[in-house]
Length: 143
Image (cartoon, rainbow, N blue to C red):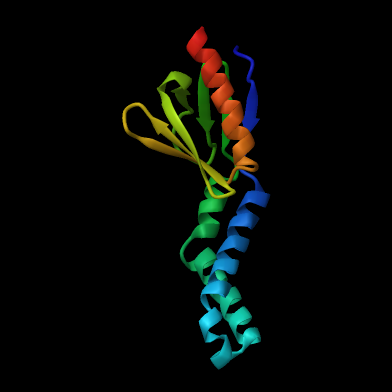
């Protein structure tokens, strides 16, 4: 069995950052309405709209679906496993990854050589994880 270099799991902190960012964005967008509705009403409206987004538009369900997933980084591949999904673990050779982009403070987008994009959702410290994957990619390219 190949020894993993790192194991990445979705983080409740990353989900919380996403929810907080959504709330702050909504609150700032309501800034022009503050003189008419007041700051407290804008705050309450932002909270309500954020909760609607989380529960009605399935952001919370998306978190629940991904919370048990793992991304295992080996010297030659990135392996995705999620016991709540009805699919076998997916192995992604590191040589197929052409670019890694950070998306806000809670996810990474992996661009593949065939044009596909894969999202590593709700991960904590995506900049650090991107560096770890890039270092493994460099090592895999030389072997």
